[in-house]
Image 1: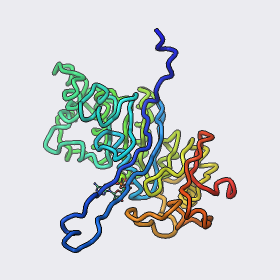
Image 2: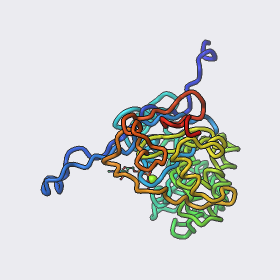
Image 3: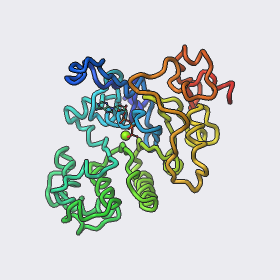
Image 4: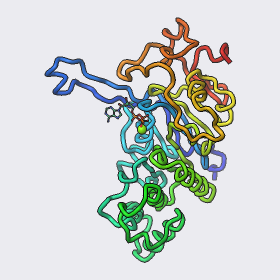
Length: 333
Ligand SMILES: Nc1ncnc2c1ncn2[C@@H]1O[C@H](COP(=O)(O)OP(=O)(O)OP(=O)(O)O)[C@@H](O)[C@H]1O
Ligand SMILES: [Mg+2]
């Protein structure tokens, strides 16, 4: 009775999420008397995914995007913090196959990682439905597989084929049909189009947008391509060395980037309107993730860095919807 008075929890909430790899020294490191290599791949990441929106997670290779994706999908446990779907930890949902598991699906860059090469694609598409008990009647499963194939621009006859009989773009369509099979509320897309030709990429992105409109799906969309972000995202989170350094509405971030790193990324793309170009890496070397700089992680490549940037770790200022982690954000605006 009091339900309507309770504030709804966000669909997906990531709070203080951290993931560290490598603990004690490996056998080789012991043999060579080297110190263990400990990488804090993701550090205190916070964000919320709202119903029906696309949040893009961007940043250079190695900044921790896929690690966030795996933790949010429940494929990996965080070292600290949590990723919750409707209040329940994703880790628990995945480990105990709770009913909510059908609500969160994942699409990877390489469809081979989600499609079994030895299975007919119809069986791959049907598998999540069977495993998660969404549908048990064989006739209904076949019917649903056919519908899904049509939905992603393929035909029911394709169900009998094997992954190698498709092009890269078609295989990604199959992987998307598989992800859709359980009628998910959230799909985590880890660079789903970066291995595809530009024209195929646009087709797949448009299809994902159409599916979102039709079914109200939320996407956590990982990419390093700002042209893709421009095309698909409602909000953007920029990651650097495991941390979110700026997050906000896409139009705001593109028109008024506040973090020097975001500016650098955007400046590297000559014209966003026509660009599907991959942003070249910013100037200077990315620090070793196992040995990040003190204070602001970006200070070693930042033209605005001052002494205090080496002393203090900037936190995301949380006054507006557009948040930035830079001590000098106001001064350099
Ligand atoms: N299983 C693992 N064991 C050890 N280190 C790992 C592991 N997975 C990731 N890392 C390290 O964690 C950091 C973040 O990696 P991650 O794959 O999340 O980055 P990414 O942003 O997805 O990069 P890319 O754009 O290249 O896919 C990197 O330094 C990486 O080497
Ligand atoms: Mg990755």
